[in-house]
Amino acid sequence: MSKRIELEASYYLDKDYDEILDKIKKENFKKAEEVTEIDTYYTDKDFTFIKDRICLRTRQVNSDFLELTYKPKSDNKSNKYGKREVNIKLLSEDSEDIEYILEELGFIKYVSFKKHRKIYSKKIKNIQYNIMIDSINQIGDFIELEILVDSQEQKEEFYDELDNFIKKMNCDKLKEKEKPYRDIVKDYLKRINNGKRNYYK
Image (cartoon, rainbow, N blue to C red; front, side, top):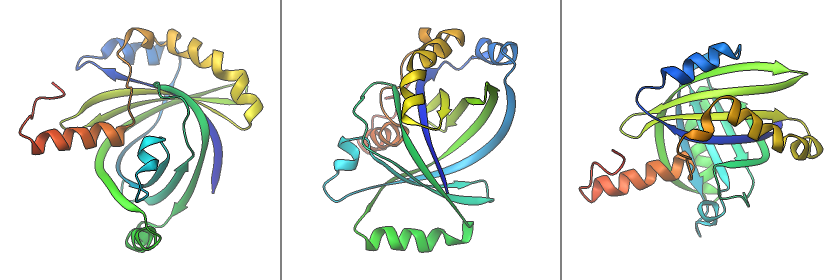
């Protein structure tokens, strides 16, 4: 099981983001991983998980393993936030059993989608900095900047550092991703059902 506090900011990417990739290389980030993830989000029956941006998610990473994630309520509705994240690593073949348990406990499957992710990382004074380039079919490309810390005290200390990270990567010029992926995809699917296929174009 992994417990950590993540400080994160997310933005939309244009189709051509070579300048961002060049900046990642210039800042000495190394590609740590390239994966395909299938994310399935759950909510409670009253949908307070959606309103409060509580995350209960299973994530299938390639065919390698399954991860169960919980993130508590977010008070910050912007694209920047810092909160605890708990991850439990499971076997891929456990997916049906985990789904059964969650639904038996009263949780509702909210949305599921596939995401292609490239992860770039480096450490500065034992603090991990991550950059994720995400592509979701029919939705678009995104960048997430993340700093991982171990305590609430570090979280408060590194809020300003997150702003510096954003500016250093020139992401302050990009359009903010104001909703979690689960809500962006859910909104898109609703509009597809209503025949408005170009909502995100």
